[in-house]
Structure formats: C-alpha cells, structure tokens
Amino acid sequence: MKLDNAAINEHNNALLPEHRRQFDYTAAGLPQVERILQHLEAFQVAIPSWALGTGGTRFGRFPQGGEPRSLEEKIEDIGLLHRLNRSSGAISLHIPWDIPKDAQAVKALATEHGLAFDAMNSNTFQDQPDQAHSYKFGSLQHVDQAVRKQAIAHNIDVIKHGIGLGSKSLTVWLSDGSSHPGQLNFRKAFGRTLEGLQAIYQALPEDWKMFVEYKAFEPNFYSTTVGDWGQSLLYTSKLGPKAYTLVDLGHHLPNANIEQIVSLLLMEGKLGGFHFNDSKYGDDDLTVGSIKPYQLFLIFSELVEGMDAKGMTHATDLGWMIDASHNVKDPLEDLLQSVEAIMIAYAQALLVDRPALEAAQAANDVAQAQEILQQAYRTDVRPLVREARLKAGGAANPIGLYRSHEVRKKLISQRGYNNTATGL
Ligand code: PSV
Ligand code: MN
Image (cartoon, rainbow, N blue to C red; front, side, top):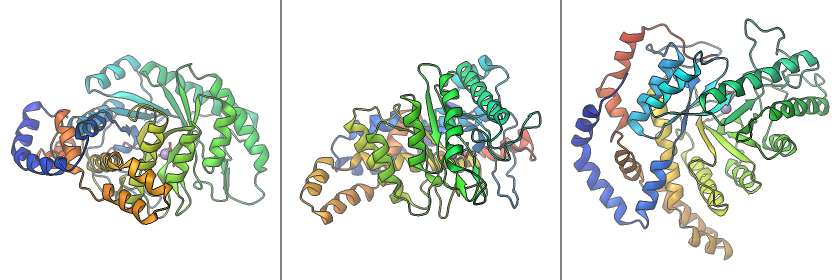
C-alpha cells in the first residue's frame, strides 16, 4: 500500500499551525536547534522483517489480519512506515524466514521505497524441514561436528544472500546453551562455538561487520553459551576487528545497568549495534520506551557521549535495529511508536549539557548531575522530532494518518485475514 504526497500534504496542512506554535516554543529555549534537527533527520532505524505480523507466545496468537504474505509485501509495509516517519529507511532480514528468491528484484523494490538492507540474521535455533541435523542440543557448540558444519554453512549462506542485497553485516544469535546442570562442559562448548564463529568470520567480506548477540536465558534456562556482554566480548575480541557485540535490550538479567555496558563496549570499540525493545520481566519484546523510557534515554545519553568522544557518526557507525513482537497491537502502529520512542530518547540525549555535566562530575556535585540529565529528559522534544520528520517529507502525526487512512482495513481487504508473517 502506498501513500501519495497529496494525502500527506493534506494531513500536514491541517496540523501545521499547531505544530509551528509548539516547535517555536521548544526551539526558543534551545541552543543549536539546527544541529539537533540534522542529527534527527539522518538517523534511521532498521525494521526487522519478522516483526510485521502479529507475534504470539507459546500459549497462542491472535492475528490482526492483513499481514504481509511475502518478502515483497514486507518491504511494502516498511516502505509505508518510512513514508510516514522518514526514520525507518532500512530492513533487517532473517534467513530462512525471508529468503530473497530474486535478489536483484528485491533490492530494486527496496530502493523504490527508499530502503537499505541492514544486518542479515542467521537462524540456527530452529530446525527446518529440509535440514539434515537437528539443533536440539545447540548449533556451533554441538558435540557433533556434522551439526557444527551445518550451522557454519548456514551462516555463510546468509552472508551470500546479504552480499546480493547490499547488506554489510551479519548478526549471529545462538540459542546454544543447556537446560540442566551437567548437560554441558562450559569450557568445551565455548571452544567449539569460538571455532565455529572463526570459520564464519573467515567468510566475511572485507567491508562487513559481524555482530555477536548475547542473551541470558531462553530457550535454554540453565546456561547460555553467549549469555552476557562479557562472553560476547570474549568472542568478539578473539575473532578480530570486524567482530562486535550486539546489545538487545531485552536480553539482560533484571535491573542490569545497560547504559554502563554500552559505555564500556563503546570505549573498547566493540559495540556493534542494537536490537531495541522494552520489557518488564525479561525478553518481553514490548514497544520500545513503553515501560522504561528513562533507561532508554540514559542509554542514548551514553551513546551520544561515547560516540562523540570517538568522533563516530551517530547515524551510521552503529547498527540501529528494532527486535520486538507485537502480540496485541497492530504491528505497524507498534513499530511507528517504537521508532518515535527511539527518536525522542535520541533527541533528549542530544540536549544534555555535556560541559556542565562534566563540571558537575568533576566537583562531585551529584545533585547537579541529576538536574542536568533530567533537564534534558523532561524537555518535551516531540516538536523537534516532528519538525525533523516534516523537513524530511514525513507525516506530522504518523499514527494519526495511518488510522485516518484506514490502512489496516485496506490491507485486510487486499491480503485477507489468515496469514502469518512471523517465522516463529
Ligand atoms: C532472540 O531472542 C532474538 O533477539 C534474536 O535477535 C533473534 O534473531 C530474534 O530474537 C528472533 O525473533
Ligand atoms: Mn534480538
């Protein structure tokens, strides 16, 4: 489904006077507004190909209807999101859930929608119907070399698909681990996994990055072979300069200080990218910023500070991706909300008065440090994010336009009710 310029203009014209009033009020109190708007306009968040349909839990799934039936329709849906918010200009593919049959055609369709291909994701956590060996007891950690070879070959295949699409990175998330004490020799499992990752690393093109994603639990509930940022950092340090750690916000044990993890990984030059989501209990995969928006801001605050200290380009030097599951909301609305939450946290982080914060830290002025952070966090930056979106040609109120245009209803009439777009 495509939205034409006329529909966007009509929507924007109605909202412009009120937007101007709000923007002028916010901008008047801020230094360097132009710089902030440029940063916001440049910032793009990749949408995962697996998040466009209704998700579910092991207890069931309640479909919304109108889910994309093919990779092409997934690209169309992300194109629509990008048309609305101008900040979703990339797609992250999961193989084998979304194998491009004709890479050239798929790439051309994505380009038509203004989309680039972000990280490719491999999958050695599920058995596929045509697969020779099972991943029941792991993939790269497996005691049987034949299973390990199969998992390595799959990752190399994913790289090949990515080359055809113009992607520049591979994300490896392994569900490897154990569910019972004694099941696994931790040291040997680590060694076998490292060997497998090394073989995959060898197959990476020169200008590619490899992201090693960690997760504390699930589907294994006693140990995970890439269980936390320390273990991921061990692997990526041993692998070499093209290997980086990927932080999925939902993959930590409760109350972990993610902003500190991010800061130290950046310091070591080993932070590769993000999977954004939010959670109350574990890997809940909820809408970004819906539960802990202050934590999201603190993470972005460390990112901005750490990237600036290294002279990195915010928009392109890390991989910015969403990894969420939309169980009760319309997935497209949920994704619009997630991207908006990311842009808001980023904008707030750009507002932090860094020299003043440094001075407060140097003076051990703890109360002042909090004042400075919360001054930025409590600023309503939504008019700034909206202004950047309008400048880029997007909609003043993406969800408002999505609803008034009755997009979901139209998608259901085009695609029907009973499709499943997710691979799980
Ligand atoms: C695992 O929970 C994960 O976060 C990995 O990134 C997978 O690729 C993705 O979710 C699958 O939904
Ligand atoms: Mn993830």
